[in-house]
Length: 294
Image (cartoon, rainbow, N blue to C red; front, side, top):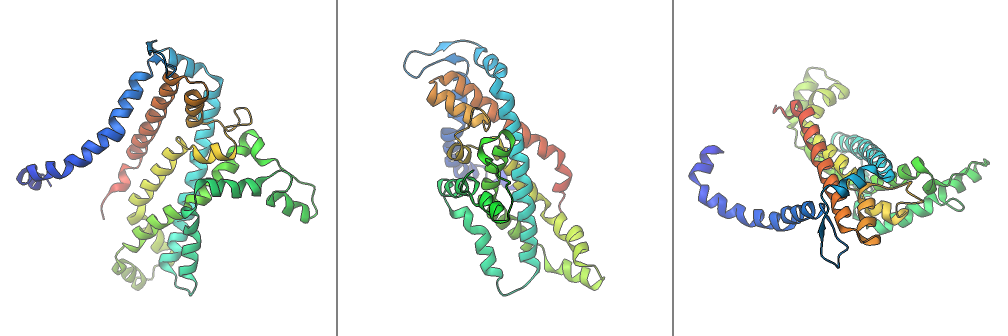
């Protein structure tokens, strides 16, 4: 790569320039503007006034912050376990077992990815409804008096939302991991079969080690998404009732569009970026040993 870069440095710069310019315009410059704005008090109309670290002090003293961070962590953990766990399981089944309805089930599991967030939110609101929701109606048909108001409770509410989100996106991660598993050379399995290795031994000694780098990418995507999740929460509960389902993006939205405190909202945005980048670097550091090439 270094030799190629030295020989074709001009051509590589020319080809990379449009992407880097576009990335700077869409990501880097707005991020820097938000960082600068986070040190000001601005209502979107009058001139911005520099106020130092006041926005950050206000944020870290806010009672909503601890709830938002807790919900974001819970969101990330459940999302990762569901999407990566089930995604890996179904990817393994589809790549190692042959049966007639295989294509049908692959499409079924991927289909929710194609649905819009608003459609999925409305579907799961109906399922979770306290009076006529599917879950409570099934419990009633079973002869029990057990009923839950799923979306109106502190911890159950955020878990209910993340399960809807996880159901929607699981097929995406399944497809990525499935592609990685199909890319494992079949000769490894043939050699293991000749040596008498069982399906379980083949999975833990061949499939998993060779797909770990791809699985790690999915884990990073799920965890960082948990700290920037917005659409499903906003559509299903709006962050309420109270602050029960608040997350950092919900706090940012309300600061920007409900309170017109653009400096405060920008400070929250900076904290979200720091959280996501920090988590990504930490995960990469902890899982560096899995990047070994076989």
